[in-house]
Image 1 (spheres, rainbow, N blue to C red):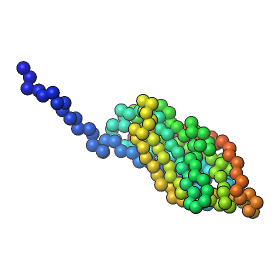
Image 2 (tube, rainbow, N blue to C red):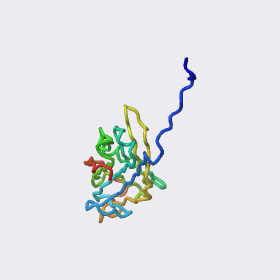
Image 3 (spheres, one colour):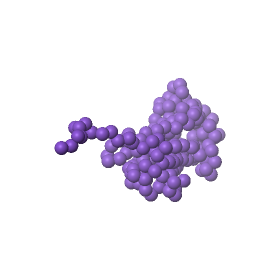
Image 4 (tube, rainbow, N blue to C red):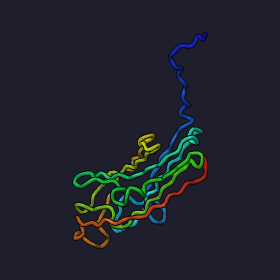
Length: 182
């Protein structure tokens, strides 16, 4: 006869050092230089999301990473997520496997006229978001990066006649993964 009880034993999960994540987002010029805090409406720019995963436990995890950049106006104006303007599917890195790479980079190209300009120049508070979807469920891992404030102004040389007008176009994106354990 066994002396075992009916109560299951608790298993200690790995420490935080075996499962860490670092998230960084940059708004860049087409030349990959940092974008000034005032972006003219006729400027093309890029958004680079970068996620670095540290720790051995990431080798055992897989799923779909989703990134986005939210814009909230300071004062009058309307907030939005960049994925709503360019298409949500462009903001995914699908079928990621931790045993293949632990550095994920997604670059979104944003064409001129994508970000609305309201009230003759809107100041936006920007925050990047990241989320891991696995087994059809969201929120396995979530994070954000506070980007600070950026201002969007009418096209150069257009005067104030352009204020309040905007066009929405689609952009392109490119996903890359770097080598294991960077």
